Image (cartoon, rainbow, N blue to C red):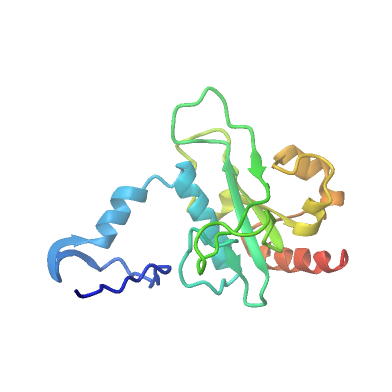
Length: 211
């Protein structure tokens, strides 16, 4: 009896260019990967997609080391200097009909990391990133104008991990008002796209003052 060797480790993801096609055992069916992307993710305002767009924008601003996004990674981005960055996004305007703009808050709770070698979630809950970037799609009034591709519509609030750890209020979430009102205690720095890399470096340096 032949034993089939299983390969159940993590999938090795390679960067796609969109020209890859759906096929039958190598025979192209004339449907491209970019067709799928256009079909599935054209709504960039949708919560799930907007969050990925925010990560991509931050990754580009920081010249991230990662070639592709890994959904289950313990944090979102690694800078060339080795700074681990977590990105959280929010927006006033959503894809669906609203009675009023959304209240802005960001999730900051500790998580249990997924161990890709052992499988499953392992160890204690923690904040794995060095720096948190809170990305706000800031258009507030007109859904016909909201555009996640317009970098001028994004505001970024950058916070060192250590100041979140020391925060006396909620350890699960933080509102935009709290970010602004606790700016000094959190050592929060507000930035646009061009200022983001420097703000992240400043936050990483601020962490060291607590060690």
